Image (tube, rainbow, N blue to C red; front, side):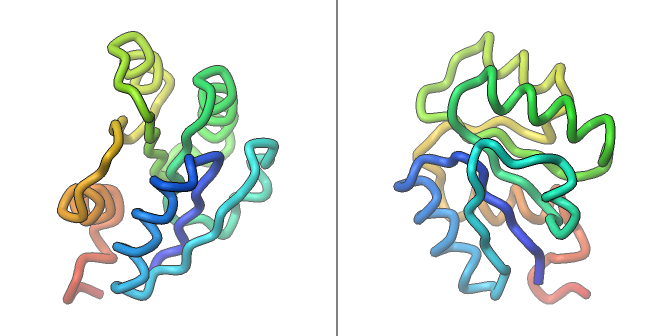
Length: 120
């Protein structure tokens, strides 16, 4: 079971991620955009959305204090510039909605191999 933090992820997308991951008994927590890096100590993976300036600022702080924390940016509308900015800042992945259940599973398995279905 992983601790999954959803930070400023649009409600429809958050509900979709939560439905898919709840089946695998992952613990899902929705957090505000004003969260600090120290508030992420329990997180195994972060899905972040909202305004690029906000998730990029958080991502940069996370990379300084928790460089190995998987951080996936989820955007409503895919923009090449935002995608590149997120990956250059250290995002584990960048996805646009809607997300398919298979894609959510893949994100979890690639970022957190120890949480694979049937794994440890």
